[in-house]
Image (cartoon, rainbow, N blue to C red):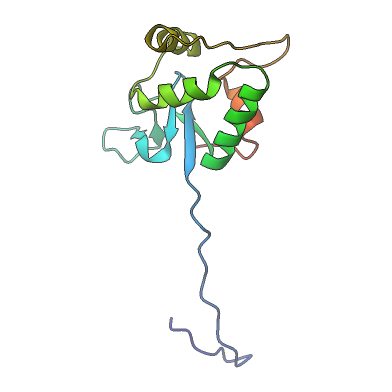
Length: 142
């Protein structure tokens, strides 16, 4: 309907303002893979299902790209050596791993940089759903 004055008030209706698009970062629930939402696959044979890992089809969690980057930076500052480099490297590889440990071993073998996950008792494992829920408080399942 055109932007006409309403009958009751005589004022023009305001056009609907769509929220500003904020890029999403997603990570897998069943393998170790993460990346931008645009890099995902789709479940189902027709490609119209929910976003999933483009390699194994595992479903995903999501949060804003900004919060993902803030969480990654905060995680490395907590003593997790080379975590930012590790996460950037894994995203660039174009594959998924069965576990974060398998990815970390391949990262170290390829780059020569160790990845140290300084885990204290009771702290969630890096790359786990619990860790990412902590880093991305606004996470939702996609």
